[in-house]
Image 1 (cartoon, rainbow, N blue to C red):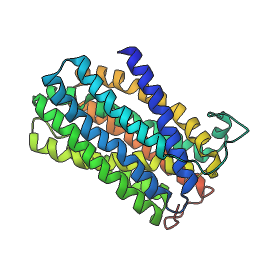
Image 2: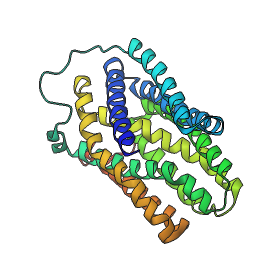
Image 3: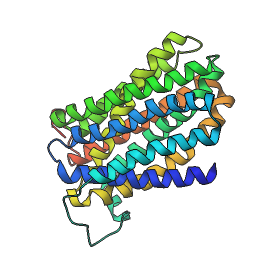
Image 4: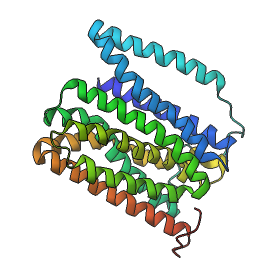
Length: 296
């Protein structure tokens, strides 16, 4: 399982970075919408793969269920590799990671904000089944909630991309982070053993988190030229990766130790810090002169 986690994580990082960098080659004005549509693919996977595995594990062995998933991934990857095209030539200077990017305070604040949010998102996705079981919900309910959350995420990713091209990428990020905070404290925190509230929380949290996931790379891309995007994205997410590495171990220790209320409150506090980081990034983009009505 450790080898599988390392290899699948590494390959997924290569695929995501390449796919999003190519989107940046072809779109500038409508980059938010284009990236949002591209990111819908991972939400579709979040809906489909749990349902496929639930059915396959009930009828097949673990090994054959994983082989079935591998076959689906192989077919989709063949199609993706046949369709993908770059527009700009490869950069001759700098590697995939360039720490000089952190000399730009806009980039630094945005990266910290993304890392804090991804800590919450991956921790929530990884631990919602454990959280649900601790609250007394059935296995079926936790499966359903993950699929519903992913469906809400797909809608959020496409919708936020469209909105961001009209009101600004950082503005959209701040709005969607605020939305996710409200859902976390207003719906997730008081869930208790109320299954209706649990189901209501899932698509609304998915909508907000999906919007942020698709907006984060677009915000990073706004700070550089199109041919630098792969380098900026790779540098930013090399730091974000450490947040996603520790989120589940940290959350897994917190959930049984401080209980579900403390667990959700902790994640909500991290979201507050993420929002503060993006407010600082927006302020830095305006050369530290705050203006409410600027499209940025």
